[in-house]
Length: 414
Image (tube, rainbow, N blue to C red; front, side, top):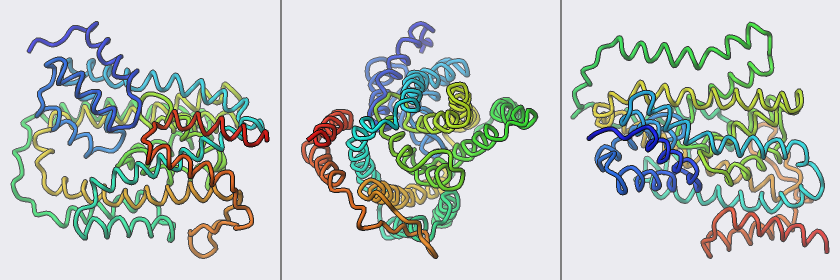
């Protein structure tokens, strides 16, 4: 097939980026329609294998799928075009929203409206839990891994990367190394060159920040770089880990701001992991105002998405071999099952911090203890209404969020 022209690539991938609302499932469906159904750019088999590869890799699978599609069509330049057009529209929206929130988000009227948004966030995370569990939990091992990961992170406070490593190791041990595809016959120098170029681009701002003595920006970049390596299972899987680190360990933002960040990130196109940009901008704003917010936001974007290009350009040529590795597939299934428990932890954690004004940290265990006298009846009523709208009436997040925000303002005015 003759490769599509660059103007046509720009139009199609730009449309995908602007229409990429609704989370990974909706984004993957949009790409399938644009790249497989409406035009013969990718075959069904190639598309499904590429999706399997992206699910094996850390990072946002939909963005990486767009990158792979562009790379398959027009090489590295095409991959850059596909990936950037998937991220840039949402990043622009997030930049504006983060600055507006930093300036006006703490006003009482705005905080009242955000109570409705927080209620919708509880249900959207619960929806993600239902969707992932229906696909990921098969057999006793899957359920055991999900339950174990929930206890590990919610009760024992185990770090998320450790849970991912343990689940992956268990998954690999349950599969025998048989029926492995022949490795791709590629010169090692090509892979090494890709690793050095993209690994160097990833590390360059960290080295520069260290030389300049920018401790806060370096710490922020190092943390989000770590997230880029352990982001298996989508953004919801690492939100609890991210929240624990940026709220409790670093003190960059507070719990309410973290929940608000997720709510606003849900309303924009692009991958949900753009919430890292929002968090980075709030943290940077607290340090040095708008200029600090923009610098921190750009760094968060760089260390979050540069690794995605590295993974795709490094692994893309090995697609056939990787997709048929039973131990890798077993590790992925185990990690996905463990992610169910992690998302369950996030769902409970968000609910506690929205329904109760005060939640005390655990003393001997990580198990949070809500202060029952601080129960918020309005938050509970809004959450119940969000459940009815989104789970029973199948209304979307944005519509539900707007309705609940308006209702919260009306009820406060009475």
